[in-house]
Length: 326
Ligand code: GTR
Image 1 (tube, rainbow, N blue to C red):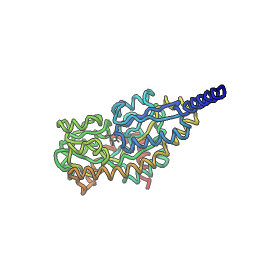
Image 2: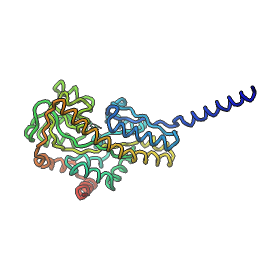
Image 3: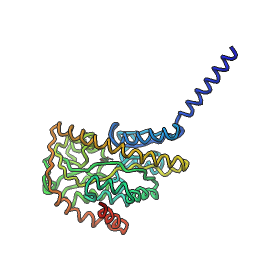
Image 4: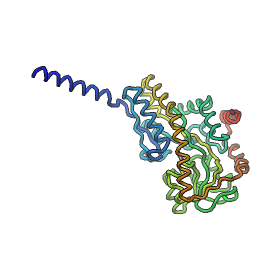
């Protein structure tokens, strides 16, 4: 009996130990505006999975999707204060905080998605990631955001003239406001979560985004004309709060960085599949898609945006180096 009791006690102790070592010592809270299943959400979950495996379950990531923690601009602030540990956002809402993010938010800065990958995977990408640090963030990795095009509920946009006077929602950054003015439209900067009802009620005529966002947000239901002018290719970024980062040991910091980097190929696969699926869904719903569009006049109209925003030597140099990258 005594032997049995001792055995039971030691089994219990082992079970307690095992569950303690399995429990997360640190759970990093991560924010995303997109719904569950969206490529960025799945990518951060994948990053968490890798991190948990590699730290024997000590460090975990919990992704709060669907803007549960707030709209991007607000979550960016909360991340600085360490209220949110990780944040996956577009670089657009970072423009007024981290100067270097402006470069990749310029219309037609990239020749295409492949060019964006080459630039962001190389030294320029590393430089931009490092630029977050003095502002209270640690840049971890870039994700795909495809290319953004215009959609609206009034008429198909076949040329710049069709944008004249249209009220178009943009992300909260001065670059996008000036981009719309240069195209003769009226920019309305507002949080992503307000776009659907604003189109529905006529506060705005339309907005602009990539296939997966146009689809997952349901904007295609209220704005049925989509024109593939591809004016922006803004990469997404995964950042960590510098405050949360400083609480980790150098080894754990390296593990976080590596897990983030390793989630990128997974993200790209997810992205490509979702782009196709979203396009199919939206087309099947009867959206009118303008694919044949002369981009030249759109590009030419952007000179004023570059003149106004690419003023520092740092940004001029970055633009020149991006353009010189094949
Ligand atoms: C999406 C992007 C989001 C958000 C949104 C927007 O493409 O993934 O992070 O920035 O656009 O337009 O606000």
